[in-house]
Amino acid sequence: MRIARFEARTSVEGPGERSALWLQGCSIKCPDCCNPEMHDQCAGEEISINALAKKIISAHADGLTILGGEPLDQPLELILLLQQLAEAGYHGIILFSGYEWHSITADLTKRRATSLCDLVVAGPFDKKQTPSSRRWIGSENQTTHFITDFYAGLQKDWPQNMREIEIFIKDNVIMVNGTPLSSEDELSLIFAPNRENRT
Ligand code: SF4
Image (cartoon, rainbow, N blue to C red; front, side, top):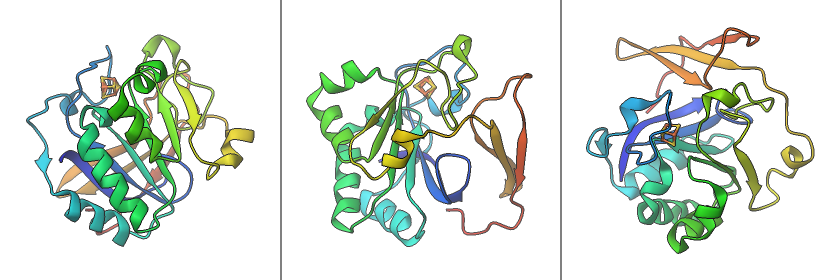
C-alpha cells in the first residue's frame, strides 16, 4: 500500500485524539488542493498492509482518519487494511474521499471499502465553497455518510467549524495538520512540540 504519512496522534483530523493516515496518489486533482505533493501515485512510501495495521492498532488512539491523496484510488489495499482492523475490533474509522457519494456507491470495490468505515465524508475540495460551517470538513459541498452508528452523536450534532491547525516539528521538518484556512477563519493553533512516536 502506498502512503504519504501516518501520524499516531492528532487532534485536528476528527473527534478525539486519533491517528491519521494519508494515502499517496490522487487521480481527482481538485483545483487548489492543499496536498498536491500527494497526487503522484509513485511518490510516498510503500508499506505492507500487515505492518500498517500493526502501527494503527498499537497507537491505541480514539479512532483513525483516512485521507490523502485519494484513499479510494487504492480500494483493494484499503479493503484488506480495513478488514484487518475490523478483525482486531478496531472502531472509529473516518474516511475522506474526493469522489462524490453517487460515484462511490456505483463502484463495487469502492463501495465495499466504505462499508468497512464508520463515517465517510465524500466530494471534491472546492475552494469556492470554503470555509465549511462544519468542523474538520474541507468545503461545504462535501457530504457525510454514517455507515454505522459509532458516530451517531455527530449525526445529531456536528460541531461547528473552528478551523484549527496543529504544527509540530518532525525530522527537522515543520509539519502542519488540519483543514485549509482562509483569512476570515477564527484560528486555533495547537502546538505539539513534545509528541513523539508519530510514525
Ligand atoms: S481528492 Fe483530496 S487529495 Fe485529491 S485533489 Fe481533491 S483535495 Fe486533493
